[in-house]
Length: 325
Image (cartoon, rainbow, N blue to C red):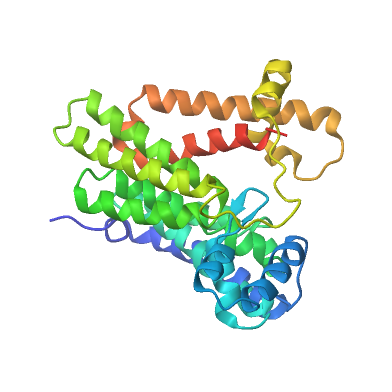
C-alpha cells in the first residue's frame, strides 16, 4: 500500500511549517504595506489606457485596447484587471499577486509529490519564491500581475503538455494563450512545447505526429496574432523599441555569451556594487548552471521530469532574449 512521503517519514512534517513561514510573512507584508499608488510602468501603461478604454463605445476598440502593445508586451490579464475595477485601486490589485506566487510552489510540489524528499523541496521552493524579488508586488502591479503570473502559467503549460494525451494538450494550449497575453515572454512556450512534441515524434510516440501538427497550427495562429500590427494594432506611442538583436550578437558574440552567462547567474549581482568581482562570479555561476542542466539532460532527466527541464530551458532562452538590447 502506497503512502505519502509525510506518512512514511513523520519527522518531515516540520518542512511544512518551514514552507509556511515565508508565505505567511509575505501575506502579512502585503496586507500591512501594500499601497494604492502607481509606480513606473503603472503610469505610462495603466493610467494611459484607462481613459482610452472608457472613452470609446466600440466593443472592438475596447478589445484592441485590452490587448494593446506596451514595451513589446500585450498585458491582457493586467489590463483586464484594470478595467474590471472600473476605477484605480492599486492596493487591492496588488493583493491578487499572492495567488500566482502561491501557485508556483504548489505546482512544484505536485511534480515531486511522489518523491521522499518532496516536503523538503517545498520548503526550499517557498523560500526562493517568497523573497525580496517577490516583494516588488507590494508596490508595483505591472510586475506582480504581469511578470509573476506568467511563471506558474509556464510551469503548468509544460506539465500539461508533457502528459501525452489530447485533453492535457488542449488545456496546455489554453494556459499558453493566457501566458502569451499575460507577459511577452509567454510567447516562448509555443516553440518550446513544439520542440518537446517533435522530440516525442523522433522517439516513437504513436500520437505525437498528430499532436505536434495541431500544436504547430495553434502556435502559428497565436504568434501571428500576438505580433500582428493589423489585427491588434493599438499601441501606446513611443513604446515599441525592439532593437536589431541579430546584428548586435554578431558584432560581439563573446560579449553576448559573457552577458548571457552573467544573466543566468545574476543572483550574484543583486546589488550593483563591487562589479569587478561580481561579474566574473555571475559568469561562473551561470556557466555552472548551464553545465548542470546539460548533465541532467545527459542523465535522462528530460524523460523523468520533462516539465522542469522545459522550464529551465525556457529561462535559458529568455536570458538570451533579455540581452537583445
